[in-house]
Length: 123
Image 1 (cartoon, rainbow, N blue to C red):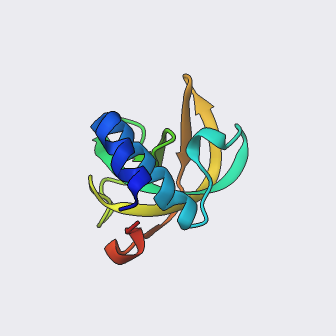
Image 2: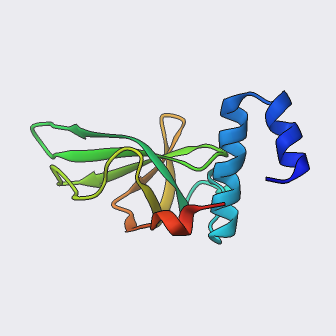
């Protein structure tokens, strides 16, 4: 840890330090920051899954996951799925898809995804 990082962690809150670390991981992975992606743009993003839920309905099952990269969050929605092996909270992933905005939240429908190995996610 550099002196700058050590000093920052002393004065910054834990959430702020963790957000900075997530942004750094995303930048090192060559992916865009969630906060910088405009609506209706195709983007490659990476981060950690904060939550994963199944939204059952009469019409279509939807697996929803929140991807957080330190700059913001994007909701990932896989339509017609009940479960996706490996998609679980705490997992690091890289996704690609069209970013839309629904009810003020960034959403990617049926994103392509790949798991990021823990060694690839280190600072």
